[in-house]
Length: 395
Image (tube, rainbow, N blue to C red):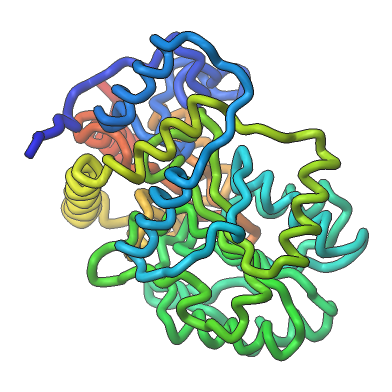
């Protein structure tokens, strides 16, 4: 077995990295330490790099498609890890999950229709709904004793009162880290079936569910709704391939699939990134060993953060995650409003995190920090945050 070194520091400065090279353009000081956007500071798995090198050496980057080997690689991964059976005709490939959600919104709803989401939630959900002329309908998650849950009464009422026809589910949930149980998924499925709601389930973080909280593909939890579900997956988070722009979208219902494909055609998009297809297939064929070790490292980072908060920053509480590589930090005990909190994080701690208010109005006193970095980077970030909270200077 190869042993991968996730402690190795690799500079991403001056590589056109959105995370490291665009602080000033995004309104932040140049010297902030960035732990915001959801990509990793780790190189991709060696088999992926080898496949990409081979493709580059070939030297021709014309229009490309994939044959059955691609489907077998991706579907085999989901069968092995999630006991989920798929069919080749279900698969539509898109450059990203948010792009796919936009296509679904345009294909399956009309201008002015309500689309349901569950804040605090991945902030592009808000914009992709509004930018396409639809209404955001919010079923706010309940936060009690450091744990998030679903208000099912409100969930049903929001669907009924707003004649909702599309629900965008985040599973596992970004940013709060919940991995929904089969029972929770089943209850949502029953309600959506009752009102004829189509579910677009964003499962991009499925490979980062912790072992004690296994991820369930939505259609496995509630197969009765399988003809009204879109399952959105991608290798981008799992294998750190976001810039190669490949997502695998699974749509069992032929008519829904036809409508969404028609919207993709209207957008003018056709073949995907040639190197992205190579990377995606190789990741699912040969990336498991790397991912296993990466997840262990991420779990150790979470344990480090958990101990640091408990011992040195007890004013900040961790909403205990069940998956993802985020930590969702409850800063309510600091006694600051959200503007003061953001100023402390950016100007005093010198950190670029994701401010809670962008995920919804019910999370303004939270901050999201990405744990997919070296331990040294994470420790430096936490020391800076500790110094800012306790009024110490940062050396």
